[in-house]
Image (tube, rainbow, N blue to C red; front, side, top):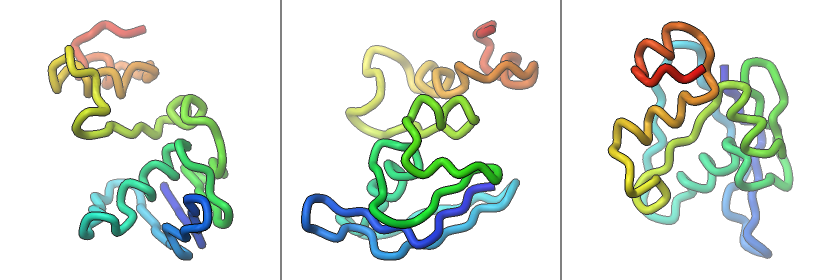
Length: 118
């Protein structure tokens, strides 16, 4: 479902991620664990389109999303819900999570959100 191959991310001259490979299959739950500065957020921001890799390929459901804009990645169904200060602070946790499903049009998502989106 999600495949990252040979991902290399740089911040200026600093090589932040070196040849990262990850594969997540349908129905799997995967965690990214590491100390501060290990590259967890950099990896997720790359997959979400917030950072452009210098090298490597990111595929979601057999579609190459490498370097795509975040809004296009969300339309494909891949959503990044940040933690901490990057959420909408005036909304509840539940409302922030509902925003992640805003573009979904399937009945199951609409019923689960209780929002009546779409």
